[in-house]
Length: 203
Image (cartoon, rainbow, N blue to C red):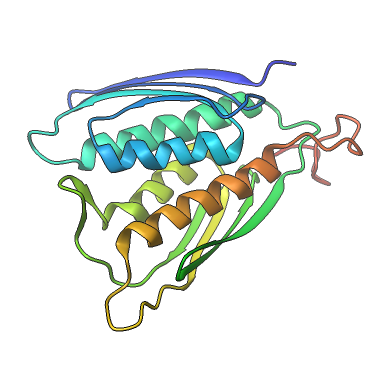
């Protein structure tokens, strides 16, 4: 069964196209106009093992908020669509990812119930010229809402001797951890025999 999706989201502020294949090889074509965000979405493809296309045109002349939010909503909707009725999947996934001095843990439940818990230290306000670090939490909230998943993201360690946390490492480790957790959760469980992984019979 093909586990693919194509989602278009068009508003007065943005135009977003997302295509995903959950059983891909990690290839990606990403263009949002926010360079660091593109780099993070590449992490989802590579570490999730998904083929992913994201094309966003947004009102960056105002700021990056609408572009990043609407892209996350479209990406979440694509995940939800590609998963279908979720028969035969593992459902749960978790990953702990180190990136130099940073350690991040992510856990996901493809539950059909949107709920996001996010914890990170105070960071420098921007990574590069456009990516506001305050948006990382909102990205996970928007993605989790549209994907209809439970997602916990915790920065367990971010200490850097003699200085503030490295915002690049803190955010990138989050994307890698979430991607690895999603990879496990969306994988087909060979022991499930196509059953929906819930005693309710639906997710």
